[in-house]
Amino acid sequence: MGEWTPIYISLIIILVMGIIVPFAVNLVVDVETEEIEGPASGIIDLIENGVDIFTYNLNPFNFIDSQLKFSLINWIRGFGYLPVWLQYFSLLLVNIGFFYTFIKLLPTT
Image (tube, rainbow, N blue to C red; front, side, top):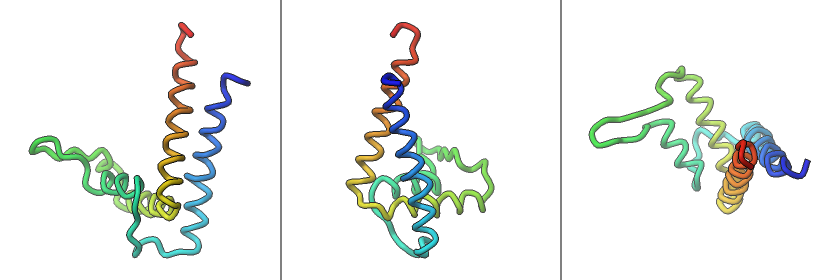
């Protein structure tokens, strides 16, 4: 279990901060009218507008339905109610856990 502990911690953080916290916030607060800060606002901007590469606009979320895109944006806005330092810390911790697990899954390690 020692090798897999970082991925377990990452999955628990994703479950709590990515599903339970936004669900609880969306029940209490009307997130459609609020402006948020931190990495959640960058993710929302990516979903809404995509990425401009020279003169071409690439939006990987154009293939999903507009109602599903709207629900995804509201879900991420619920995550945006966490303090900014907690958003950055959780993203850093999750990335470290996934990179560690990816390295451990390589056949040479």
